[in-house]
Image 1 (cartoon, rainbow, N blue to C red):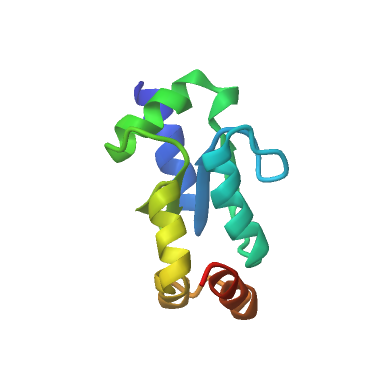
Image 2: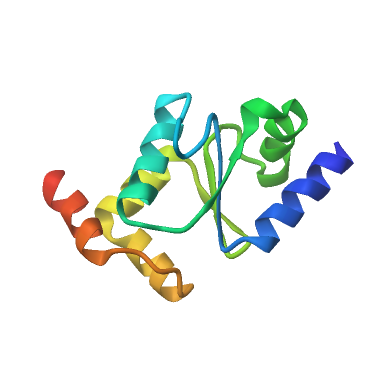
Length: 120
């Protein structure tokens, strides 16, 4: 597991925004991963996706790395943010906007507002 942990750590630290997910941002392979990827894609965040289905060591290792039992997992500037429910809540409450602003992550604020309007 050390090798997987090292690879996870290097990926998280080398990229501003990383989503460990089932599938890819272009083709998610589970509903939860699809929801988080859809939010990030819609608001135009540049992020690295890691398909945990392609590597069993990463799939189990990411859960240990974050001490979080589920996938997807979003990291911003090396910090674990949360999974699908947390990211969805943050998007709807504007907390995700604040997180990206505070970390100088570019995103489309108008698109983020549209998500909130559509879910009001």
